[in-house]
Length: 127
Image (tube, rainbow, N blue to C red):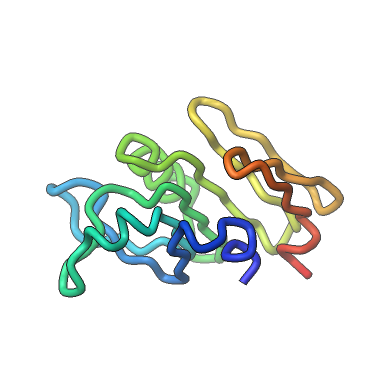
């Protein structure tokens, strides 16, 4: 998997990562989630990750609404997420939100991730 190659063994990367952004929320599922191995190991096998993964990737589908994605991004970013990606397979774009800044990348662009100081070509995501 591309993200495992990027983040290496210090991070747990999973498709369909289940988590509870806050104690008040039901279980949510990120299309792809990435957390530190330490945080992953601190979560019991029969429990869900508390707080959002450090990286959340959502792949848009026809059933997603703008409000749904924006709410998920806001709550995740307020509860431990450092980087929230929205992958749009129809337009071959990736929108990355870090802090209060969202950057939109086209198919020819390269996304810089720091740390761990690596670059991801958007074309590889859709490759």
